[in-house]
Image (cartoon, rainbow, N blue to C red; front, side, top):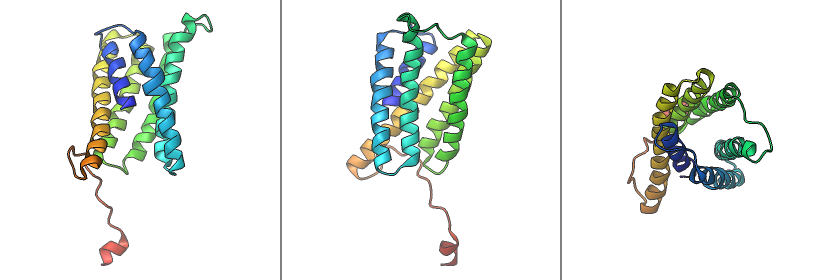
Length: 184
């Protein structure tokens, strides 16, 4: 939810509906940032490498993104030029592409979140490399879809566990056929 809600709100801005303000920055620091880092640590304690990597990395993404916006306003650093931000976003796109490959072991809903996030990062990088407001608007709408898919996936996990049955389907990954299963 922290990733999904923060992503939707930032991308409503990217789509051109409202400016960056304290609401987006606060969500980036606390719900998109700190909450995800805490969950990543909890996943580490459970031995879940994928969950640890995803939650801590994207939590720290939100914290660095807010830092990139706020530090120049505080006089702590010069603002990053758009092309530098393009590289920042491209690196996150590459990382996320690898996470997408890892998500292929899981249900479709998780795959969709990571696949759409990969596309989002590369669209945002293209926006910053080219200076194209049109690409930025497309990225904003795609980011709303990405964030909404994360919200859906989070709520599916909560509601399905709470009710002990499928309330919101996530496209469960079917068990792979092993040689032992085939022989049986």
